[in-house]
Image 1 (cartoon, helix red, strand yellow):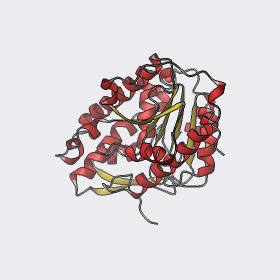
Image 2 (cartoon, helix red, strand yellow; image 1 turned 90 degrees about the horizontal axis):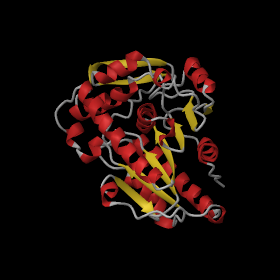
Image 3 (cartoon, one colour; image 1 turned 90 degrees about the vertical axis):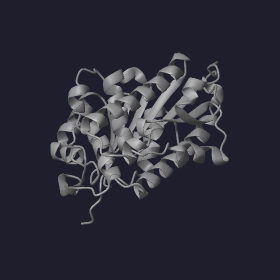
Image 4 (tube, one colour; image 1 turned 45 degrees about the vertical axis):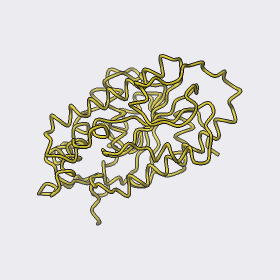
Length: 302
């Protein structure tokens, strides 16, 4: 069986593929939403402040009533402008503003490109990213706008940590794609040591004996471990309902593993909307994404 590292390469085909698929579907979603602009009066909001502009990349009307925030896979040193640029290429977006938010390592690439970081440092850098994301969401929410968050892979874990730290009502709705609530200890511990790791058949964690040769990849692994180490069934347990989350996962995900029976049961007990099927981490099925957008955000894709 071919070994698939957990998104720990500088040039990552999966990162590009999943972001491109999401960008295309975001574009279709915006086109669909634009047909229904008359159903809801637009929110009267000021143009985006320079302080917030410094934290984001965006396309669309700065006064749009709905904000869609994409939290991409990674961690990457590059801001995920490709998602937003694809939207703006052919489609105007009245009524919706599409945004991606800086993370600690996109503002300071030396975090990944420099010397080895520790797990504690990775945790702190991730905390900085959560605060930036929260600041942007709060800014738009305080203006009376509707804010949706879609996180994939590393972005799924960032989104979960946002909910754990800031509450389920931080945003109005969430689409979480290819994440985990309680990843196996062997997996995150291997990543914390800077090692490559994957799940055989989406179930059994396999960790390399030796760390990555490149410090960049070791640091990526530790950044991922800094979030994956958290047990979100425990952190979400005090939240009465997770009904504004739609969760998509693949049964044979080699990168983060499939959700366990216990994880699925927990989400069901909190009224989470769950979509799953045969497939791995790098195949976010179009049908699931269409259904996910419809059920998470009320956006009907043709």
